[in-house]
Length: 260
Image (cartoon, helix red, strand yellow):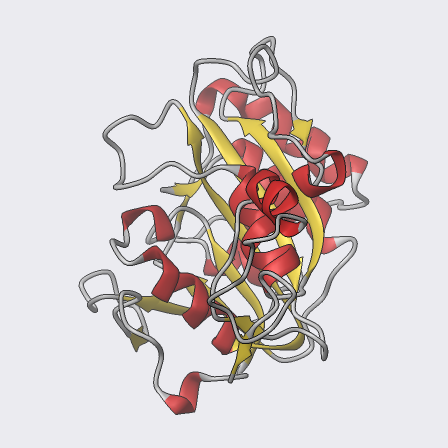
């Protein structure tokens, strides 16, 4: 993917709340250009968040987004990709866990639509966790709905709350649906942890049939850890009190096994 208007708006808003103090990383070298249809919205978004710049101030000649990220205060962002065909500085296959020299290195990792193209998603997510420093944030925007045939996967907010929130004990700061078209009738929808209600999220009538991002921000804390496994919230709620739950586990609490 690339940074379209709605992701631009989210990054501008994020920049008012979070400034990484150390290294920043972009998964895939994301493009950034001005969408002609929504060109009037860029300055409105910038102004509403305290910026005096114009939309063209964030462009760079090669069409990528490092200038955008730097001007928003996210630093000299580094890029990671499977190969260097688009000029990425760090070459790494997200299907594999990162080497030791990449662990605990980044205060910000931005994924503008890369993980959906990676076959081994569990390894990709574990690798991202390993590369984040405590206090660092992972910001993700991948397909939730309408991206048929675009990548290998579309993602559900259940994954955010199950893996990042409860299994890894990370802080989920934001989790929402964002329609690619800001003019469509379906507005942005925030998602809550299904474990709170004990039943699955009902998305019917809340998100449209058009292309929609699952956008989320999570923070790795000093208490965060990698799990041995993660359980979907409604099943965990049902199984937790059952007499056969966890018979093959070494501990009694589901989803809380950790590893280094």
